[in-house]
Length: 263
Image (cartoon, rainbow, N blue to C red; front, side, top):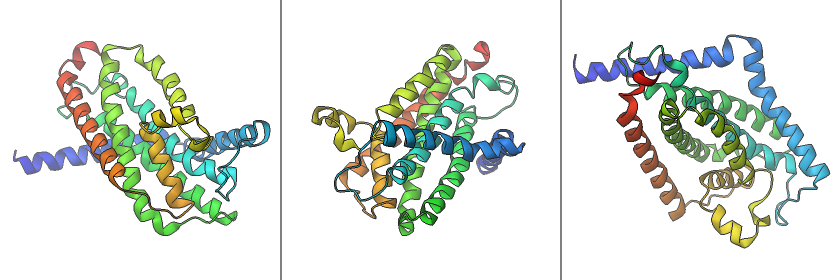
């Protein structure tokens, strides 16, 4: 078999994995697809009520926009990222019947899970943007051309984490219980429910090292304010994520040969 044919077979197999994941999780029943939209909407409504009504969350003084649009722009990408990482972290241990029985690159399993989750949630995200526009929020649609590569970079970051955690969980099963609270902690330490400017200056310096905070800030600037703030930091962030994803892939492949013995 030539290298070209092998690559084509691997590509088709990966596409089938993605399609299978989408059908299994979202399209095989109406509630699965509806829940894709309803669950984030419910959480958005709860967070909007709690933080805008009870805790009186304040917007930055120079921002003339409602709390709900400010939250929604950040909440959907985080939901896609978080769900993709959590689903993919369990993907190898839940696919033990495939490992060692079919000749394929095992990293395709977590990568397909991340890809399927992002595809479906981005459909939901586009729906939310349309609803926000219809409700009077001015969305800068022209900047979607910059949002797409930004989301692809977030997808790559999720893939890197998924490769590392899915491989680790084969040997450390307790990771399945550790990951959800870790993602919850990450959510509340990322400026999604609040503006980063309200953090103490000492904390802001630490928060700048949070990749998700950087993603959220850029999405709000592009879609809500029509601002383009890319530069040296964006290049450094992209380089760090690419290197991290490559190292995670190396880590995954280093230990994938032992998966069959532990599954």
